[in-house]
Length: 108
Image (cartoon, rainbow, N blue to C red; front, side, top):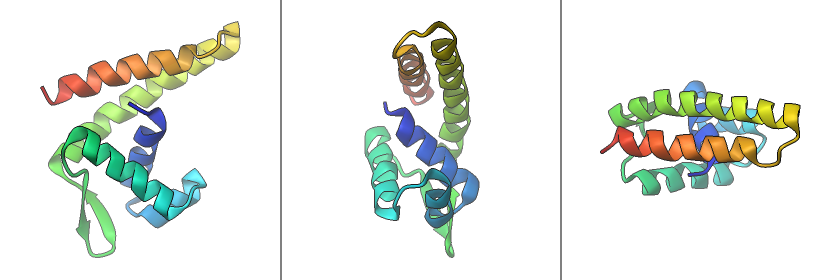
């Protein structure tokens, strides 16, 4: 589970296009597309469909979006703890553990 890919997914969902999301994330379109494709392979289902030029979430993508927002929020809290106490990798560990538990339970 990679928090960077979850953030990419949330950003695409919020902006509706890969192009707009790349501007926000400061990465190239091919890199962002690979991240989304990787998530789809990992979860075993499509996250987005197309409506003209816009991307729209599939029903399972909608479910995942709510979970990802929560996970990214928790990961951000972990990073604040890391800053305050100078502990290395605590934010990544908290985020990764929460992501693995929450997302895997979502589709069991």
